[in-house]
Length: 67
Image (cartoon, rainbow, N blue to C red; front, side, top):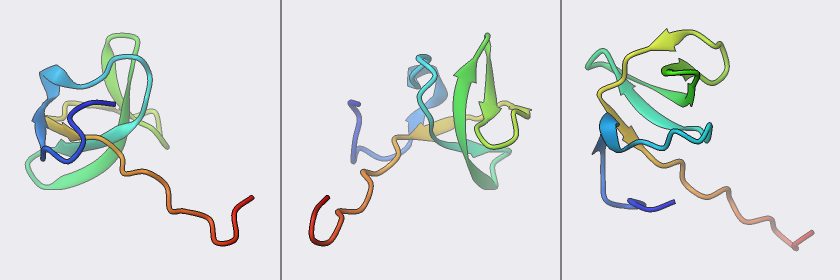
């Protein structure tokens, strides 16, 4: 994903491929969101939201000892 480590981006530039990202909503909180059928939805609930900004998810932590 591009835009990594560039800070919050306008929601217009967010991915619309179904991948999840962090979204700033209602000027006060952050949720994990994805795009689904012409709307933004909270990934864990399916509740529609209207975020203003987005940020890519960070990479997962490295596994100790490798798998």
